[in-house]
Length: 285
Image (cartoon, rainbow, N blue to C red; front, side):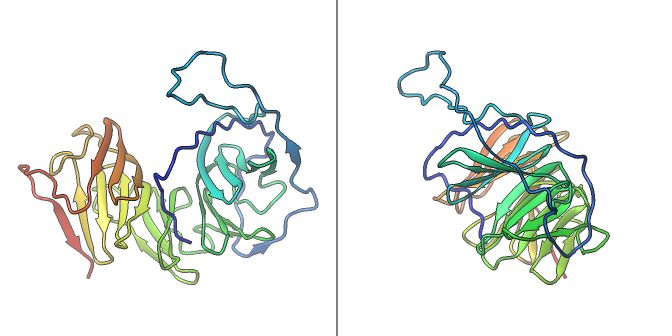
């Protein structure tokens, strides 16, 4: 699967979903058949848009469900047709946006590795990948779990997922990055950020993989890492405790970085402005 964040249009969707879910649990690698307690399917109750007046040119928010999870933290989204997969602090929610029904997945009724979900991605074969406690993969029938105990995953806390043109899955963790080609794992504990904490991953049309986290942002072309920080580029953030928390790439190839001090955009072919410090570039052997 290839994951790209496209700026083709804006659809604002507010999810708040209430689950009573079991605590996180680990698992072993392998196909897992959902337990006899099938995931519950319910119909969400649509709410009318807020009565607060807004300018005519600004679309109002529509709350599509008033059913909340055990906490109201929704961390990540991924679409698969009309199906919205939402990662939450209480498991995974599959929302059918056409008829506004949903299915809850937790470790107690499925093969999900843990309740707390930080990242969601859907690959080209329609398989869903969830990162939080380890990695969970769901093909619609069976689940597969990956943790440090039974795979090459660098760390059990997974913060980001991206899938490149070749179908490789990239996982950001607190101990660097793991790449999984479906059979083999490759770990990159040092991504050039000065720390190994990775919060965001995106892949551009040129096949470059961009990482963001504590320390700034890096670009990896398959061999060479180039690091961008506020002191060697125009990246917006505090010079101390730099953290790039989100990355998106639009149709024009611009890279958008969400930081602790606003948003930075880096256009195709642009060179960061001159600075006292050169870009940090390192090459894999």
